[in-house]
Amino acid sequence: MILPGKSLMSNRGVRWTCLILLLFCGLALSAQTVSPQQLADLQKQVTEARSNADNAWMLVSAALVLMMTGPGLALFYGGLVRKKNVLSTMMQSFAMMGVVTVIWGIVGFSLAFGPGNGFIGNLQHLFLHGVGAAPDPDYAATIPFQTFMVYQLMFAIITPALISGAFAERMKFSGMLVFLSLWSLVIYAPMAHMVWGKGGLLNASLGGRFPCLDFAGGTVVHVSSGVSALVCALYLGKRKGYPHEQIPPHSVVLSFVGACMLWVGWFGFNAGSALSAGSLATSAFVATHFAAAAAALSWMAAEWIVNGHPSALGGISGAVAGLVAITPAAGFVAPMPALVIGLIAGVFCYMMVAKVKAWFGYDDSLDAFGVHGAGGTLGAILTGVFASRYVNPMFKDAQGNLTGSGLFDGNAHQLLNQGTGVLIAWVLAGVGTLVLLKLVDLTVGLRVTDDEEVRGLDLTQHGEEGYSLE
Image (cartoon, rainbow, N blue to C red; front, top):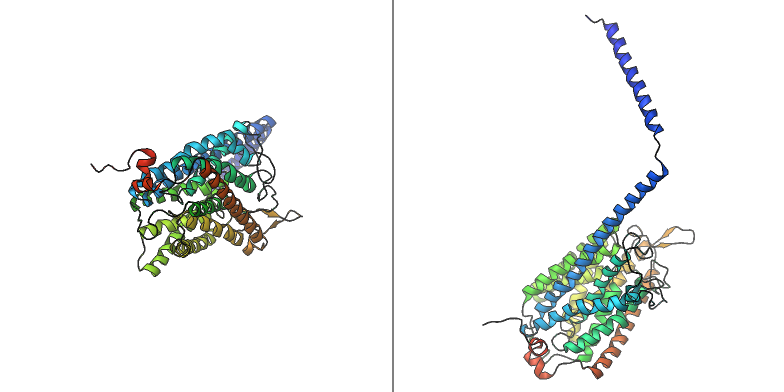
């Protein structure tokens, strides 16, 4: 029999014994201090883990952006032309994957991202000199400089490919190769340097004179290619029979598949532009998706009101318009402003394609200007309206305090900076494209003959057909 008093004393003794043992264990553990070398090794492991995660995301993003050109854009554009021109149209996108890669490796990357003046980079990275495994902290501190280079290459590939939508079905393959090769050096490289390069006139993150917010290429990619597309359409003139003859797409199914690939690839385009796998990439991913969805709905709604029914072609065109418009804003706006940008872009680009083109009578074959030029311009301006310091802090005052990013964030002046960036892109792309077209036309020639256009560019430019019906 255990007496109650003895039981109580026994329990107290056990508790005190345990407490004393814990105290001694704690003292013993505290005596084993972590050495400075162990701390350094741990910090190195953490840094390597973060770098590896960021690098993996950026390599995937680069692959996604390449997928946007081939097969995404190739299918999207290929389905919109007549079947006699499907292969030639797809080849224009595919050719850029080869030609621009070589140009970029030799000199293009250096002109775009080498240190230089406010307008163009120098030749420091000629033949990719100095572009290796070590990061460049001015651009991306946690990924190899070579990863940054190849990611930016994918932007350089798709941008001139977008222009081909304006001159589809009537430009010689040889003339296209020379023209777009020169365009990537004379127009794309300076625009990329001004907006994203060290010392660039419009670089918002590295102290440019006119800090233009362009997260993933609203001015660099879409305004420059869209304006150049308009100049190409005007210079080359209309396709035979346009607009008196109906020239419907030969396969909206191909275009539908291509548009869906573009939508998926655009996550690499916009979210990848965070240059890391952090929360900013998530924010840009969400904004991209919301804007695309809203624009697809608003374009279809506009069609429904005007034509009495929505179309599949309208839906996919609206989605692309939303993706274009959100590109400069993706890393600066919250989800609800992204929805608003998408809603506006869908209706605005629909009007440009369905009404404005008919009013002025130009033959922008696949609406490269109506979607990319107009949508990119709209998106760049709306970035100045909706950009928020709480999404991505960009500006500080003299005391180091965060200041507003856009109009609704208390920075009305940013609209002027956005307008300056758009104006420079319009002038450079417009004037530069006209000069290049004239030069190539006088030397190589641009437009196919009337007979070649009637027979189709698949046969006359490549000696093969896209479809064999036998």
